[in-house]
Image (cartoon, rainbow, N blue to C red):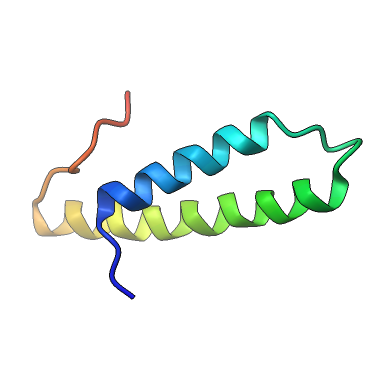
Length: 65
């Protein structure tokens, strides 16, 4: 599967936002599943960003940092 970097970043941000709005006390299974997704997307995004940096390319999105 091919996924554009800005799309990956958007998916990661939306998953983080959804996780922040989920109460782990009342939705433990869903919270854990979403937390795993956020972690995996974050790892993929990290690889993508490091690869771009190593090759001298800028990010195709603004991270606010």
